[in-house]
Amino acid sequence: MTQTMTREELCEQLAVAERGALIEIAEACLAAATLEVVRGPEVGTVATQVREPVAGTRFLLTDVLVTSAEVILDGTPGWAMRMGADPEAALAQAVCEAELQRDGAYAERLRRLCTDVATTTRMERAAEWERLTATVVEFEEIP
Image (tube, rainbow, N blue to C red):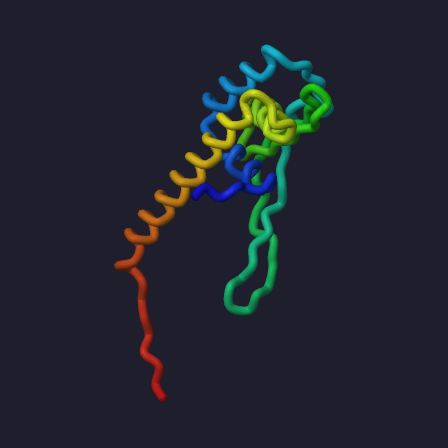
């Protein structure tokens, strides 16, 4: 049984999807749709906040370089933010996000791409945890 992803989850997967796949699908979407670029690709930084796991205190860790874009595809808004300086991929991601929101002709292909990206990410993380398991230090509690 396939679980339906939320808009946030779809955007998360699009943000880490391979740029070539995004650009290819975005170009296909644009062949049959009208695009209005609301905010062209902009490269900037975003402050990264993390939570210290023991005390639960939040603090700013670093600034991350990102590229964002905003479009309207046949009346449906799309938005994107990708790590790094990649204006073309950010614009393609925004187009793909709008295509998903309007449930256009390429929406199912994009959902499959997002599912594949999520599966690959999950497998890579599991493999990394497996590799790190040998380095875990366990302490005994003294009663």
